[in-house]
Picture 1 (tube, rainbow, N blue to C red):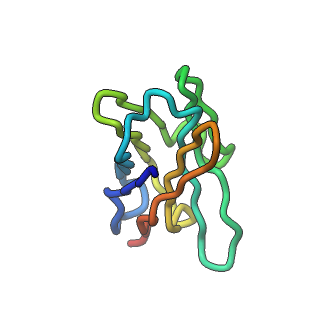
Picture 2: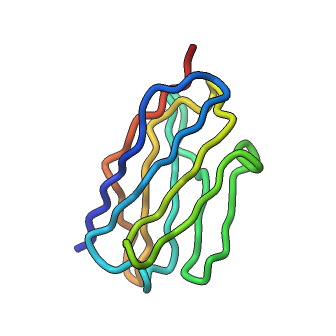
Length: 115
């Protein structure tokens, strides 16, 4: 069983930055992929960014150039560095991890961008 714990969410002003962390209860070295989804009120959950075991990354068009995903295998943690935040980035952000058998989810962390 894999447990994922997100942290780093909060309230930030437009143009500000936040760094989300997703700590796994097991080694992430062999995870096929990890990443972040987000869900805004009244909207479907959407993929924000992902990173494979080989380090390849993928981003939603809406966050390219503003968000950066990275992983630290030694700390079993994946990060999402978010910059130039906009009000439309307001959402609950969920971390996920893909093993050979299934996908695991974190509990989510709220990000609110507002002045």
